[in-house]
Length: 221
Ligand code: DX5
Ligand code: ZN
Image 1 (spheres, rainbow, N blue to C red):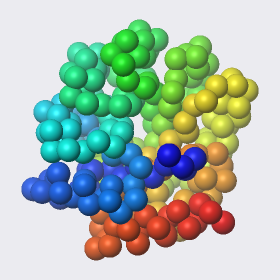
Image 2 (cartoon, protein in one colour):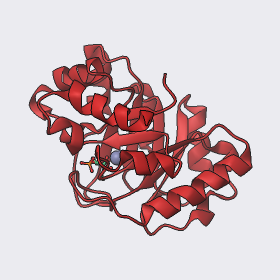
Image 3 (tube, rainbow, N blue to C red):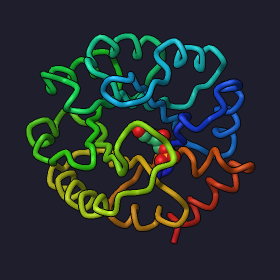
Image 4 (cartoon, rainbow, N blue to C red):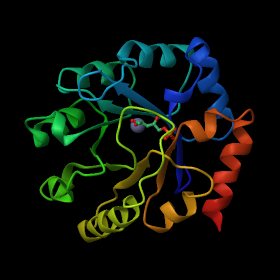
């Protein structure tokens, strides 16, 4: 895998032909499938659960699946998603009463673990769990919907999180999610991100390869 990972959010895919659409975006050069799970409780929208993750695996999708849980409570879904083929599972600290325990549960189920920080969530929540994190996901929009605009203060927040990662000496991915486009991905990368979720910017295009190539070209400069 390259050092920069492009993770299309299938929230913006064609649900009526999901397997084909995901296969197509991977063939176009995507690295990771970003799988947004919304429960109409923690966030105001409703998407899909472990059955759909399993269906993608059964269909033959073998790329890493990055499950972004926007659900509360969160723990009971973790073994379900691990069984259904999740590779990475991330959750919001506000959705767990015992953050360290939930991270350990993800790892005990054989997946990579991460915390997701909403735009207004302070960074202190990371301080005593850095040793359990494989991924830190910064939301650059408020979670719930695709197609929103990137919140500019995310850039400063990314820089601060990157400093924490470097200070930890650990190999932790810094993922950003929401409003990532060709015209801002270079600035986001310069602030420290190395994993980019993009939903509408990729799936709204007819040519997924061109959309992904344009993003990678920005990362190469
Ligand atoms: C929002 C989701 C995102 C979303 C990104 O709650 O977590 O993954 O689908 O969509 P775009 O790239 O369209 O902002
Ligand atoms: Zn997401």
